[in-house]
Image 1 (tube, rainbow, N blue to C red):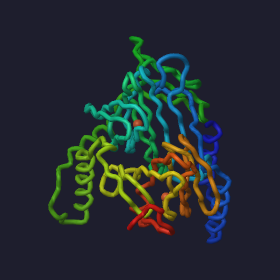
Image 2 (image 1 turned 90 degrees about the vertical axis):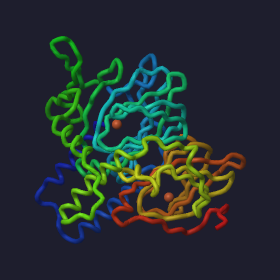
Image 3 (image 1 turned 135 degrees about the vertical axis):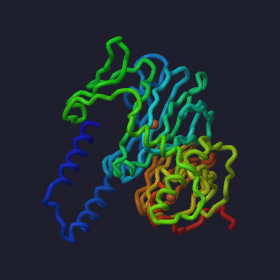
Length: 388
Ligand SMILES: [Fe+2]
Ligand SMILES: [Fe+2]
């Protein structure tokens, strides 16, 4: 993590230099450099347990980890990806209460196991295995696992928002009995009440102490309230500027009318050229607008998906079974619990290696690519079960 942070800052420093190459050849050199780097990175990841954070502790007793973390942050560093990364939350039965916070970015949580509920801006939403819950932008949220069953969730993320400078987040509440990681310390008021924490100079290269206080940031709080109050606007905009004012109202409508839980068992399977697919979040559903599409695919025993190409990258969590991908002619084996990366612009196909059991996975694909005009699939071969 420390090394990644250093690398990131090194890149930032480099980008501040005045003598950046501006010649036309530089883009070809970069293109080749990045492609070569991409080829050296693994495409299949195992669940990676990481230490607890102030947000919460996964288990009820002992020194346990907060969540398994598939994070592949920072473009072309741990994974052959530019925009996608993922968390894997494990909230065990009777685990301490998790913290609450708010950030710009929206999130989609796919419930792999168990059940629980979610508090968002004071409202409560129940979810269970196979559901997706949605955290719309700027929403205060807190996750609760069922005390008996616990809960596990796959949380693919689109780090594009970080490239856009949208890091902003507020901490409203720490997890129950927070453990302060090395390099941090609690801040208490005169009554001994915990009001925040200090990230000490030197941690991940911080140049000074950074104090994080619990509660709302007044500027953002006001802006978010005003945005949420933007009235519905059905008329034609009179001016170009009105178009953008209207957009604020339209976004507000999308935030507030959005279903916060997509019930997996209510979504129908479709027989597609790529195979048997259930789009939990897709073009029909605005939840993906801020992040990505999410679909489940099932491949029958010893069968395969269609073969296709898309410009956008893709991140896949294997839910059941074992098999392999063929990506650009190279085989990559996977099994239940693995995270499989499909890099940008890759011809690929998924194969079930089991003769008896089906293989099942959930896939995330960023929506931004299609919004920019780089969407769509090129179908090179249909799934064997496709009947047209
Ligand atoms: Fe969050
Ligand atoms: Fe794909």
